[in-house]
Length: 113
Image 1 (cartoon, helix red, strand yellow):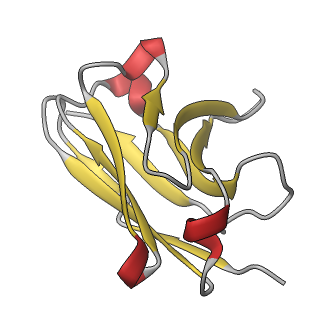
Image 2 (cartoon, rainbow, N blue to C red; image 1 turned 135 degrees about the vertical axis):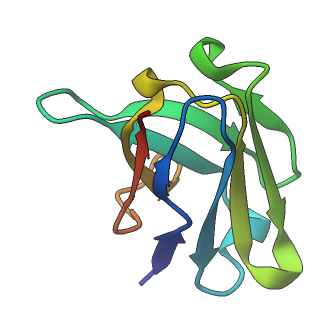
């Protein structure tokens, strides 16, 4: 059973930065593509970014140039660096093993003045 623990969310003002972290149970990052999704109430989860087992990142067009995904295999941790945050980035952010139903518990990000 894979376990994912998300953290790092919070309440910030527009233009601020946050870094989300996802700690995965051992070895997962070396074998699987990892993803960050986000969800607002009443809407499906949208993929924000992915990073392959080899470290190749990809981010959605909606956040390109502002969000960066990275990982540290030694720490079993995936990161989502979010810069220039906008109110429309407000959502619950979830870590995921891409293509599988292994999810973190989610971390709330609220961007508001």
